[in-house]
Image (cartoon, helix red, strand yellow):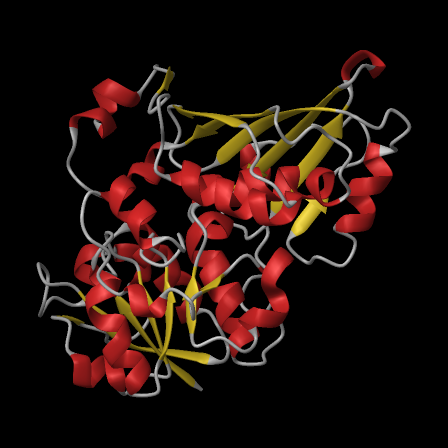
Length: 343
């Protein structure tokens, strides 16, 4: 059994990760940490996990975490910086769900996150954990940077077009909508029921923290720096992201449906819908799937790609487990075979 630790297990991504790991046939969740809830049993915070063992939250302890085979960080930015190096030196693998190791340029990271990068010496080693691009590197990695939720939906949507060079990379638009859980499990006015319910708004239009992460990945795929307009929106639902992606076609004879079906034919967690399809967030709720559909309205030169994920699963915790499976030589889908819940 793989002994796993979770730092920051009381947030939405942390408890979603714990839910997945408790059901995983090859994992034993051994250490769960929370500074504010140390000493409290798991079920006192999350009654849905009652009966799933006798786990108790404890303060982060390097020795206890260092006895684990893998430690997940489901924490705000800056926390993994302080602990990852010590854990790696102890032989523990690290999977970071925060933004600490996603951006390769420490100065760029510092500009977007408002503090100096705490572990620049680890950036070269960190593998960006999008299996659909970096599967081979993930299998050999000690340190994984799990992609953000918006970057996952946007990158998987644009990927086939940019890989094959059939669209203008200077004219990309990502119009993305997320549920409120994407803001995290903390007290803030914008997440209150009376603020978020029956409301629909854009935010961070001048620049969202996920923008440099998306640009970094798309630049590597396209071989040049793309021009991307990224506008995130908050919608009054708990889970899910729907990204509507727009690009200008430069090769008029491209069979877009065939292109997407061929690119993702062997990917267990990307589902390309039949021509004319429209993915819905509820169709991926609780699953590690990204559902895609590609359209060419009116047969013109505009490509529209629709990308739907659960922001807490494929956008965070499920993708972390997918990475863990690859790192430890397990079947990639193990523990992630759940079916979406409807209604």
